[in-house]
Image (cartoon, rainbow, N blue to C red; front, side, top):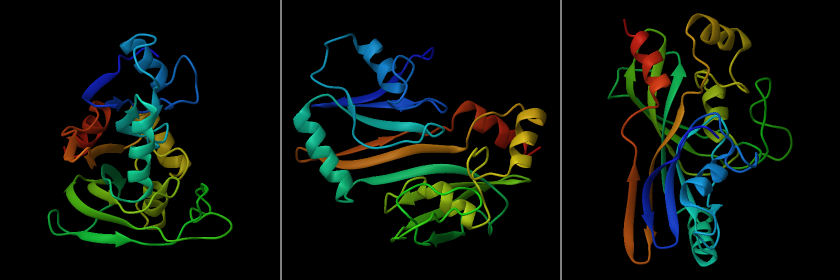
Length: 228
């Protein structure tokens, strides 16, 4: 992994780091996010180095990593219990209502396993999935959303956005091949517009709030150029 991992904050038994888009969390030894973090911290510097939650390979943003086994258990329980506030910024295709006024809910049931662009709901038993969005800004072709997740189905935001007719910009699984080719060849954009920007949880009696204010540079560039 070439990029140096940026550490956002450290707590007792955990680290929050900023994951670049296009890098696996822990499925590509030597080149993934955890390998880069281990290199940054130094071998043997922590009891463990284990992600507490998931981020897709293409998604950038805040990743919480446990450095002790006890903390891994306690934080994993918080995520499983739905008591962690998780928000994302998503750049999606198309327009909603006027910025600042448009809010909505996507609640189409989804399978726990990933779908595809032909059937984002997925095959098999579908269960409750709840995503809420708020429009932040719009350009000629895209809308920037603030999104809060209330359930944790695989690719939930990406699948709900596709089902709503507003796929995430640059999404290789749920976006259209034509749009992906246009972005790559005409806009030199080879990323995905989904960014984990906010986490809030209780840790040993205190509330921890972690936030990234800015979009990744490549997403911000595409959005600003589309406003011209």
